Length: 103
Image 1: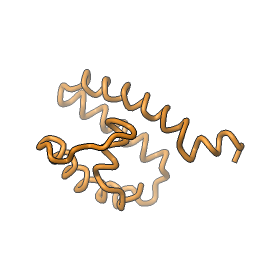
Image 2: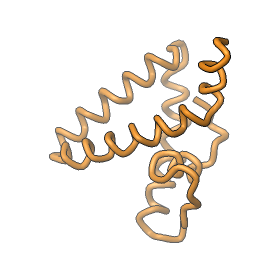
Image 3: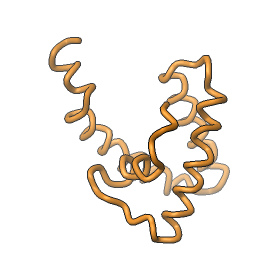
Image 4: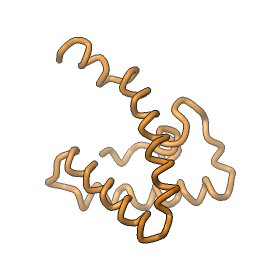
């Protein structure tokens, strides 16, 4: 995970692929602040683990937190939405080129 990616880019990829997010909205600004604070800490704590392990660990933590916070329904809706965005990104991103060319 790269820490030089701006929080708005992280949010854009998760909430609406290709759209520009307006960071002036208070709840979006608060989320961007949270992302900016937490991402470098995750990168630091995850040294020595591969990307796949990190993805699985963060997913497990997210699911556990959603259940613990009684937000499982919201998290499930977000996972469904993000799954669709990941499929779109996979069809157009660098990984799709590797799949098509076999590299």
